[in-house]
Structure formats: C-alpha cells, structure tokens
Amino acid sequence: MLENYFGSGIAPTEEQKRRLLAVQAALELLKATLSDTNDGNGVEYQLKTAEKHVSTLADAIQAAVEKK
Image (cartoon, rainbow, N blue to C red; front, side):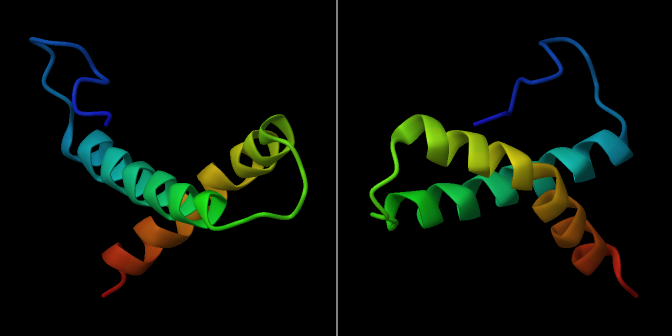
C-alpha cells in the first residue's frame, strides 16, 4: 500500500523502512477492525477515530518487533 511512499529513486533509511512496516501493519489492523464494525457511526467518524490511533498502534507494533 505504501511501497513508494518515499518516491521512486529514493532509498529510505533502515529506520524509515521499519517505521513504514509498522504503519502498514497498523493500517491493516485498523482496516480489518473498521470493516467488521457496524456501530451505526458514519464513515467520516470511523476514519477520524482511526486517524487518532494509527500512530499509537504503529508505535506499539514497532516496539514489540524491536523488543529484545
């Protein structure tokens, strides 16, 4: 989904690659959660709610993967 986020011909750093993978994982989790949610709220509300959680979820995923 975000494979070319840094643009073509630009080599992302290892740190950027790890963060991108964490964000992709967070987006996949949110996508699955939102597709399974029928709480009566509109799409705009659900997207705003998801937007609040992407970074936090990506942080948690990245921390779990990098934990030694």
